[in-house]
Length: 87
Image (cartoon, rainbow, N blue to C red; front, side, top):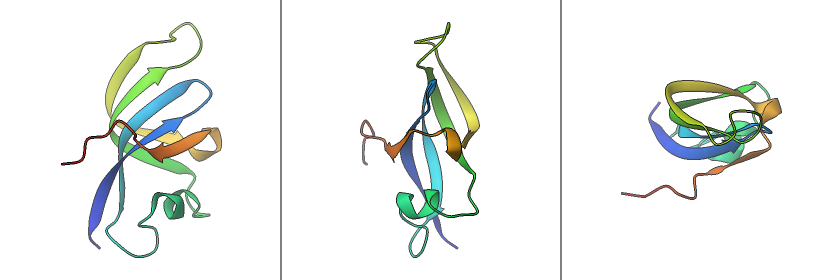
């Protein structure tokens, strides 16, 4: 199955995470909304992620990580990254 990456922003109560989500090129699950609404998906796996602390003592701190898993039950907002630059 061919895959594509979509840059997304996920916000929880404490963090903003921006990274690349792997999605099917076409068909079911190729839309961001299809992927996050699948019953068998409990986590989003984001690659090349930048994490920003929004609350607590580390508020404003930023770091990068090659991969991060975000529990969907903690996500308050999941959108295509509005700051992305399309090629």
